Every structure is written in structure tokens, then in C-alpha cells.
Length: 275
Image (cartoon, rainbow, N blue to C red):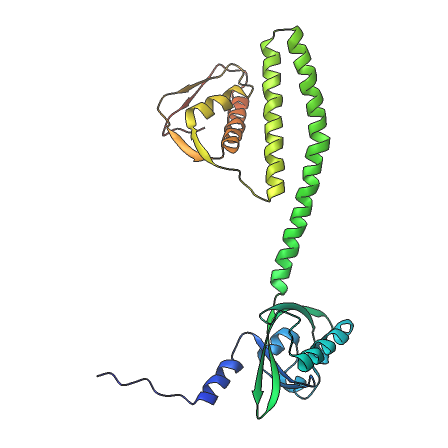
């Protein structure tokens, strides 16, 4: 028969947990005096527990926010109404060296020997803020890029499409058809990039596509010189973003045909050979 696990001293056990917690913990009384701070506070704010205990919590509050903090605690002590989210609120704290640290603070109230105390669990969210700012910068650059696509590329593209349509009305020419198809593909690509920039995504919606059909469509859209394309095997279908897949084919065919410029050549595609 297995023996029960050994009992631990409750006070010592929980004291050890708090002292070794990764989050900072700070306890104040009703007058905002700090009565406890765990060692993790030093990693976040630069102060050792001994430097904080006995001082006012205003020591770690940016000066511009001191009246707000003071009024908020006084209001809660008098009315019992919470005006902030005690489960997690983002607030700047003042580091020992003077810079502000973005923190996420969770609050709890408790009593001891008839006195009221308030404990804040402090998490440093500097890295999260950095990532958020980085994402915001990327979004702003994408928005600027979308504006360039909309005005600097799409406007002259529309003009080119208009003149091509007029020319096709007056002349039947396979070259004009090629120009029209190329302009339409550019327009589709611009639209895809605009959608991606708005959504902040790197790939569009996927669908089941016929690989052979896409290959021939990509082939028809590049200057192939005297090269020819032959697909020997049934390539089946895949799930992919069709426009991205076709663009990959156009780039690859363009590179290969450039290498074969001036020669009569064949490009073969099968399940085991890929270009």
C-alpha cells in the first residue's frame, strides 16, 4: 500500500511559490504604502523588495499618472466600485532608471488581521508591445503599397486596356489579343496584391485546380520564342491558390525560355520532371 504524500507547511509552501514566481507581485495597504514585493519585481522594475517595502506605490507610477492612481484607489475604498478591469489592465510602470515599462496588472483584494490589502500581479509586456508596433508598421507600409498599386499602377493600366480595346475593334490581330490577355493578368495580380495587403495575408483562398490546365495557361502568358511545351503524364489536381500557382509557372517558364533563346527546343513535363 502506497504511503500518502508528505504534508507541507502551508505558509512556507505558498511563500516559496510567491518568492519564485516569474510574475512580479506587489501588495499595498489602503494608504498606497507598499507592504510586500517579491524578487521578480526587480527583474521588471529594477527595484529590490527592500527598496520598495515601506515606500508609497507612487514610487513606481509615472508622475503624470499619480493623481489618477490615487483617486482610483480612494474611490474604490470609499464606494467598493471597480472602475477598471481587475483581471488584467495595461498600465505603464516606472523603472528605477526612469524609463517606463509597459505592464499587464491583475489585482486582488484580501484582508489580514482586519486590515485591507491589495495585491497586483505584474507582467512585463515589453516584447508583446514591440511585436504589436512591428505589426502596425508593417500594416502602414502595406497600406502605402496598396495606394501605389491603386493610383500609380492601376490608372495607367486602365488607360492601356482602353486603348487596346479600341485597337481590337479596328484590327483583328493575335498580337493585340496577347496584349489584352497580359493586361488582364496584370490587373488580376494587382487585385490579388490589394486583397492581400488589406487582409494582411500572404496567400489567397485555395481551391482544387487542374495542374495541366494551369501549366498551359502559364505557358501561354509568357514569351516562349520557338520553344514548345509537352505534358506527357496526367498531372491531376492540387489544392492551391490558383493565381499564385500560375505566377510560379510564368516565372519558371520565363527563366527557362530565356536560357533557350534563339534555339528550337522542347520543355517536357511529367510527374518526375519539373520546370
